[in-house]
Structure formats: structure tokens, C-alpha cells
Image 1 (cartoon, rainbow, N blue to C red):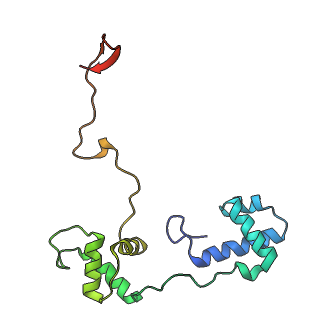
Image 2: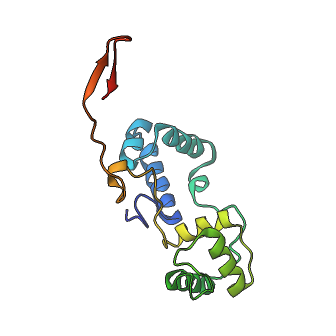
Image 3: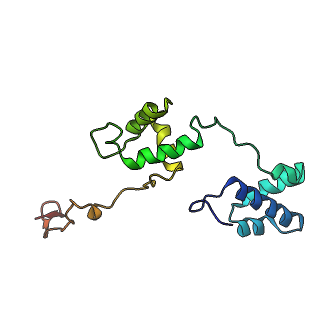
Length: 165
């Protein structure tokens, strides 16, 4: 199965995976084998098996996604990508860096739709405009940080501990 983005399946791909797993389960393949084959946890394979035996194959089909629908149309979302890539200065800000608060303000100014800055971050990531950065940079990877070079170590005879000289 091709993925939409690194390990993220589309709703159609997830449905296809569940239906293929259902065929295997009906043919007597164990839940552990199904979990390994489809790259899911044993708990997920077990849940699929319970659903299959309790409600049938139709219960494994995709359903309407829960949650509030997006307040921007597809055309507006593509326009949003253009706004982001043009940068904050053309949108009236005095900086070259987008923040979620600035971008929320730009969305409201352009489309008249108010979004919370926290949600704007999710929109930016969903549109692939900015990659999520996980973790922190190591100290020696920062351009302004000098690598740590310990000096000579001496032992303080009064306490018997090592101290920097």
C-alpha cells in the first residue's frame, strides 16, 4: 500500500487493510499473524476479529470521519498555502517568521474565518507547510554553542571528591 506521507495511511488505505485482514481472519490466520502482516498491534488485530465475528465485514468499512468540518474550502486551503509560502511580510507583519498567532491573524484577515492559534498549527502540519520538529537539538549542533572541553580535574583532599581546576 502506498502511503500519503511517512507511515500515514489514507482512510481508503486503512479500510483496504482492514478488509484484507478480515479475509485472512476468516481463512483461519491467527490474530498475531494478521498483526505482523499488516503492521498493527495484536490489540488492533483482536479488535478487528471481534468486530468481524460480532457485526460482520460491513462493520470494518470506513465511516464518516467524526469532528467538525473544515471552515475553509479546498480552494481557500490552497490559497492558504500560497499565503504561508509568500511569508509574513506580504501579509503585513514586520518579521520573516510565521507564528501560529500571526498565521491565524492572516487567515482571519484574508478569509474572515477565526481559528485558534493552536489549531492553526495543526492546519499548517496537515497541509505539509512545515515539518514537525520533535526533540531538541543537541548542544554541539547549535551554531553558537562551543563544544564542552573539560579542564584538568583535581581531587580535593578535604572531601575526597573531584573538582574542576
